[in-house]
Length: 324
Image 1 (cartoon, rainbow, N blue to C red):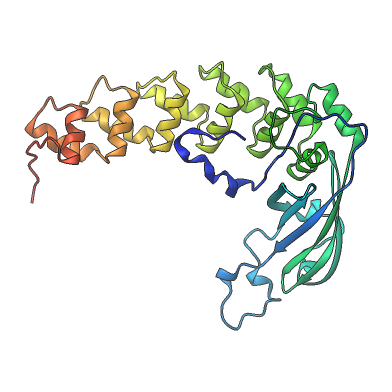
Image 2: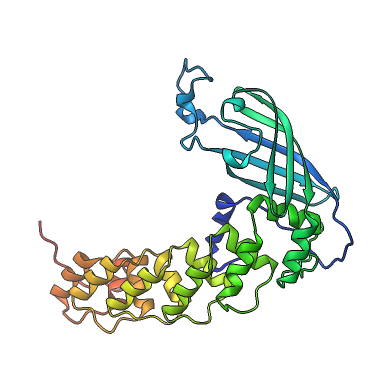
């Protein structure tokens, strides 16, 4: 994925720890990919002295999911890693009780291929090896839809098989591909499929954002919208407060600096008018709220946002009367 502005998107690793390495290659058949897996069903921070590790009360909060981390290394240099929670229903041959202790053998069957896992669990911690068999029909089906897993502009490449493994782990389906294409969003590539699957972007979300007055959003924009929780309702609320914004990046700033409809309502009530988005962001950055504005206006009824900022940082002092 590309690096996003604001430097905040580095936190994506906590949402989906995955490196998708791809390149310009053409192959006739897919190869088996092997690697290792790890899992920890227990939460040490919830465990008290004397607790029996077999006591189900110290299982992690979501007992219907098992967190698995996969690591593969096909060329001795670049390593693909992925970590996520998997529903037990998706882990064929494995139950929650089996993750206590013992030898296990289970598989994850996805449209992109099958991941066969073997290993052991000891006191809730598991590890082992896996073997991924890609699906040729999936590869062909995606290619017929315009998503060619054998082609990419990435400089780093571990091969099409690693891309298919990533597609299986994230569960990138042909149904998702059909759904995204149905909305007429424009040219999409395989990387866009991965982003859509990771950030739960579908045709409905695309259409809703398009209808808010942003007809030319890219997949990168939609990813930002998901990360910063910008949806049609948020756009409507901002518009209703009289701050209609047609620059999507400015809406992103609103979310980053926690500009809420309530905050917009408060500053409007204090008589600050003709504010643009940058003014509003400045107020949030320097923690200038309704009470501060009200007291400043007692001294200077025509105080500007710039003067409020200068007061906060002490560059240009205006006497503000504070009640005891």
